Length: 411
Ligand code: C2E
Ligand code: MG
Ligand code: MG
Image (cartoon, rainbow, N blue to C red; front, top):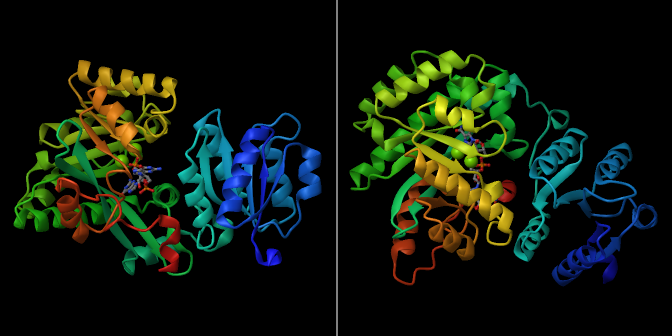
């Protein structure tokens, strides 16, 4: 019997954490072992290990060295990375592992909930890498062009609701690429590629077209949610964009104020003056401008005062664990206050449980988005979700949700 069990190895110098992970894994049916030191790891590791849960910060041999070791040994084990220190280190480590040909199925910031670990472990059988990478296949300019031509892209929509009365106010459009060979590929991976290959404008055009036509369908049914669309500031170089979007919106019989443009990576804009020109004219035409992922990566205070943003989106790196971590809660609280003081709306993304929802409501945040409210889903399912969510004792979470990104390949 036990020989058929999947093997899991957790590597963490904190004994309690290692035991916790191993116990959760055993309950799911893994044959789990824990390593607290480099020599434990050397003793326990074999090429037969199916999953390695790896803490990045350890005194003797850190997680990055283990990643290098696994890459050199062409390990086929699936990796779950953990770190309690800094989300950006987790992100870099994840990218590094993927670039080294390893298969990372989850990256968990400590503290994480048991359910997150369980989800990562139970999804592993169907999981594809969170970051598909160049060495795995031919994800080059031709593949992207083909994807555009063969319509391998589609949009999913994630609801946004008001915290004070739970009412539905909008959706965020999120792009999905269902690759015929590699399965679902994360936008975090292919959007930068599309930018690099000069294909992003065609993709953005597609996204707006799909998003607006979905808005039109809802409008015909008497619903007028705001539609948020992601645009990387690096792509804000086309001076005619405001006019093009204005025309596109009018063609669908919609109004600009219904459309929110979420800007990411503001400070890496090639040409800040052009970006500012475009952003200001978008605002003049009535589009809502949102600064995405506030507090992480490239978005900063400077952009808040430089560009005419009207909405601030607090990044899920802060929101996700704010109910468990008072430092994170302080960051979220300060971001909300800052937004309000300069006349902006505050949106929290990454709301995964009721405690977080309640904490945000207590802090006076305006709107929220996250798995607890709904995962991204097909446009056709949104009205069913809304019916469930607004029912007095509605079971709002699962019915119409998109399956986890990683498991789309199986279905
Ligand atoms: P984003 O704009 O910050 O989008 C939110 C991301 O958080 C989405 O990931 C969404 O699925 C995920 N998310 C939502 N709620 C939760 C939650 O409760 N917990 C967790 N852990 N995650 C949650 P997704 O769809 O993988 O998109 C990743 C990023 O790719 C987006 O981040 C956005 O920057 C970019 N992106 C997506 N679609 C487009 C697009 O059409 N154009 C451009 N330029 N970028 C896009
Ligand atoms: Mg966004
Ligand atoms: Mg965001």
